[in-house]
Structures are given as structure tokens and as C-alpha cells.
Length: 302
Image (cartoon, rainbow, N blue to C red; front, side):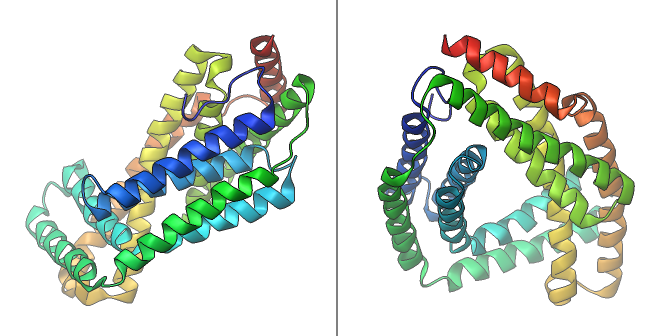
């Protein structure tokens, strides 16, 4: 139950418990680096995202604390992003090469992938201050653990139900609005916003999964599928940004034209996938979701 709140337990203690587990896991990865520093960073960054999801769930009940700690975690993660971001572009090319959109362009796309892999390796080699940044990140996590002693959430089961149900419903409602905006506009920033909202909804479902394990697990699985597709789409946006900033890192004009054509086709595929995946996930009214979560958590808390 490392990322689950327990019904019936004091809410402050539960949030602190889950946050400490995530911080401790990040510290352990960054210190021990069982699969090397870059995999350790990747794992730690996933834990940082879970921490931000946790703070978002209860932020209406402790706005100043959650805003401060969310900023702390965001800043820690940002210091460790360079190689991971470069690696994500290589992975984006792998996904493109595996998609139907690339059948006739493999040679050009493999050449681009090789250049991006070489770029990733150069960035990794140039990171002479990585150990210092990892040490600073560990210190930041330790400060985050210490700060948890200052969290004060409402006491009592009824108040816990109110905080959690409203937190889930707020994030869910934003996901619904983000889906409407993305499908209406097709703007990159709207799809990126939908990705963030789906991600946080998935985290909140996981945090409250003890209330209704079967249904919550299904919702989490659906949100995961949508999140993966939206993540692939976001990686394409980052590839486009690299084309604008460092075209030589991609290739010549003809290769860039091929890449952009394939990216556009793949983005259309991904958007269609997301619409199909989230059609049922986001179909209910926000107030209905809030009342349902409240009832489930109240019954589970006893």
C-alpha cells in the first residue's frame, strides 16, 4: 500500500505516510543507483510525480503547504531532467518506428534515431555535475520529509471524506474540460493539458483504490492507456521543438520533412486512440463522481 490511502485512518497521518514512502524511495534510488544513475533518476522522477499528485488531492484543505511542497518537488525534478529528456526523444523515435505511419520511411527514420541516440550520449558525457545534482536532490527530498511535520489536515472521518471526494472531483472535472478543449481545438497545448489531467486523475484513483478495488483498478488501467498515448503525443511535440531549436541534430531538410509527415500522421492516430479510450472514463458528471467517491470512502472507513 505504498501509494494508497487507508480508509478510516487519520487523513494527515495517511498523507504523511504515503509522502514519506515516496520520498524514501526516491532517496534510495538516487543513493544506491542499482541500474545506473539515469535509471535511478527516471525512477525518482516517477516518485516525484506521485508526490505532486498526492499534494494536489488535498490542496484545498492545506493550500499554502501543498503549494510550497508541490513547488519543492517540481524544482527537485527539474534539476534531474536533462538526460531523461534526451532519452525520451530516442524512445519517441522507437515508438514511431513501431507504428503503422512509418512503413515506407524506415531508412530515414533509423538515421534520425541514431543521431538522437548520439546526442543523448553526448549530453550524458557532458554532465560532469550529475553527482552534485543528485546529492542536492537527495537533500531536497530530506527537506521535504522534514516539512511533512507541518501538514495539518481536517480531523475526523467526515472531513476526510469531504476533502478526498472534492479533490478527486476537482481533478476529474478538469480532465473533462481538457478533453472537450482538446477535441474541439486540436491545439498541442490542449492535448498536453489533457495528458496532465488524466495523469493526476489516475494517481487519485490509485490513492483511493482501497474504497472499491475492482472499479478503481479498471479506471486506473484505462487512464494508464490514455496516459501512454498522450505521452507518446507529447514526445512528438518535443521532437518538433528540437527540430526548431537544433535541426542539425535531426538531419537534412528532406529527412526533417519525412519526420514531420510521419509525426503528423502518428499524432492523428494517437488522438483517435485517446478519444476512444477516455470516452467512458470521463463520461460522468463531476458532481456524480464526487458523491460516488464520498459514499465509497465513507463505507470503506466504517
